[in-house]
Amino acid sequence: MNAPHPMTNAFREAFRRHPAGVAVITADPGDRPVAMTVSSLISVSAAPPVVAFSLSMKSTSSEPLLRAETMVIHLLRFTDIDLAQLCASSGAERFPPGGAWARLPTGEPRYTGVSTWFRARRLGLLPIEGATLVAAELLEGEVQPDEVPPEAHSLVYLDRRWHRLHKELDGVAELLDTSRFL
Image 1: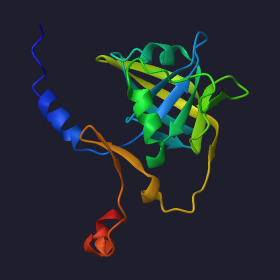
Image 2: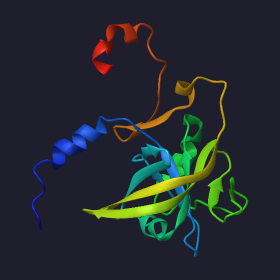
Image 3: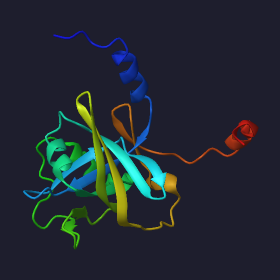
Image 4: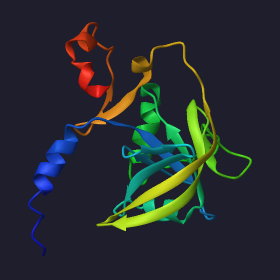
């Protein structure tokens, strides 16, 4: 058995303390729809709009997601926590008949209750140590504006738990020396 990398424990502890947004990736590689919750979604470029995320090869959902040329990326809100938990649960039925999902005209499965989503085309894959980094270009989508402040809806994953962001503290911005960010 290989000895663990000397930075593994520090890495795990640091990322347990690093909050991350939550998304669900759905696709259909041709044999069945598949979905997975990820907290690794990042923006790469705004023009053209490109994102990236990582998939652990330990998950049974990763292989079919990697076979799909296109996918739907759902950006979750706190009110979508049940969907986040469902798509993070091993062996759960993610696409039941009559469930809150439908196929886009292009065939990809989309959860209809999620207000912000994008259809994306896979640009490239980079296998790295038991995971694969996926880059994808956004092709179309929808962002429904809410009347409620973003923190009321934001869903983040931190310390192996789901959280809602709290309202920004008044006066905190004045405490920061913003001159070094100019």
